[in-house]
Image (cartoon, rainbow, N blue to C red; front, side, top):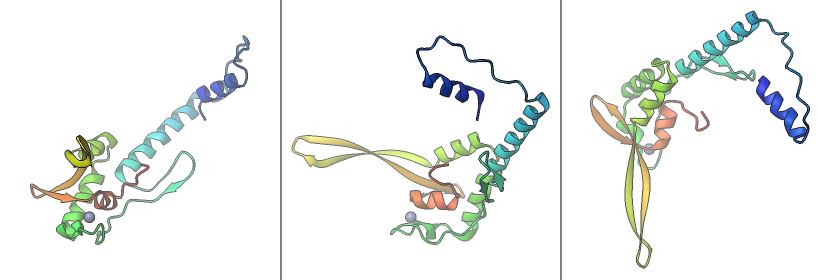
Length: 159
Ligand SMILES: [Zn+2]
């Protein structure tokens, strides 16, 4: 809980009041603050590296472990990537250890395709944007489904 959110809670109770809230207590020592910052950075790094860490809310998040994906969609795109290729992609992604780089790597796996849908109605043409997902193995772009990308790299939809 940060000091700013405490303040906004206080204000929302009584918006009309001219009363200035007292300054937040400064009991916490600098040392503790640095320690918290350090813990936060360690958590961030561990998270980026896919290592086990405990979230700020005390929830334990287990280490990302490679698992050969053998099921995905009806197209079975996972069989285009053998176990070694999958392992390499997984390791490459989690060895980055940097959220921003991981995000840009993920973005490079996405391709926007706009498709014209003609059967929307008489005289109507609807542009339909879709995302294509692919991974690059040995310089070759391999089309895969979203499900395979998420389960291979162990990325959950909610982060
Ligand atoms: Zn698939």
